[in-house]
Each structure stands twice: as C-alpha cells, then as structure tokens.
Length: 173
Image (cartoon, rainbow, N blue to C red):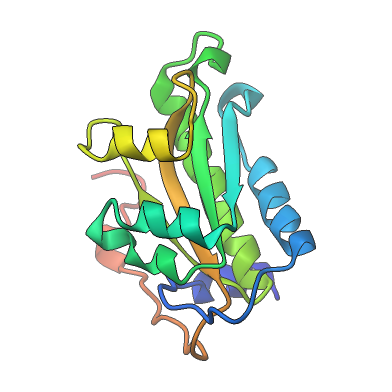
C-alpha cells in the first residue's frame, strides 16, 4: 500500500470478525511501527502492552460505554508513557510522542488489512483506577489510550476525504 493512500484511506473500525485472530508476527510489526514513531528528544518514553485474552478485553470493555468494541477485538494495545524517562521534559511531550506512536500502529495495522480505533483515556476519568488495576499497570506508568484492533467484520469502503480548506491557515492569520 502506498503511504499517502494508506493515510487517506485509514478509517476507524469498531466491528471485527471474532473468528480471526491477528497473527503474532503482524502484532510485532504493528508494535515495531509504534516504536519507530517520532519522539520528543528521542526519549521513546512510551510503553506498549498487547492484550489478546478475550476475558481481559471484555473486562476493559465494561469500564466505559464507548469501549464496547473491545469485546469483539482480537487485540488491544495499551499505550502508556513512563514519566520517569522524561529527562526533564514536560509530561505533555511524552503524551504527544505516544500519540504519534499510536497513529503509526493504526496505520501499520491498516496496511496489513487489520482495522482499529483509538480509545483515549485520562488519569482524571473515574474509571482510570479500575483500568490500571485490571491491567496491573505500575503507578510509575500512565495509560493514555488503548488501540482496539481486529480483522474488519465487513469490507471497508474507505472514508471520504476530510480535507477542509477553511482549516488550513497559510502563512499567517
């Protein structure tokens, strides 16, 4: 898949074919793509937790109404940051770097015929402690989101181009 076409044709996928598991080598390729994202000062202070156990994915899905698609997912990827690895950087830069890694993983999945969607989270949300506990995330790490992935249930038609000229400021206001 040509890169620009892949970027423009990627769409959020929330319904998966439960009968198909994602192959381990494809999971590794997806995580590798995340680890090759740009990172503030080359810190790479992200951590990724892959989850393929349907019981775990269902337990997480129950924490938030918008996360129900995890019940059908073949793979969940927890995207976390390690503030201790920040080396003086504001934590916000780590979150931005981890978001870039998440997008790389979504694009890699798309190129492999796997659908996915980004499920954001915040440590200020009421369910955050339950999520951290369910996944046994150490207090030293902060979860910023989960990627829900699986082979799409239906053939994807592709999104319409979302380019909006009015949101492009050229040179100055």
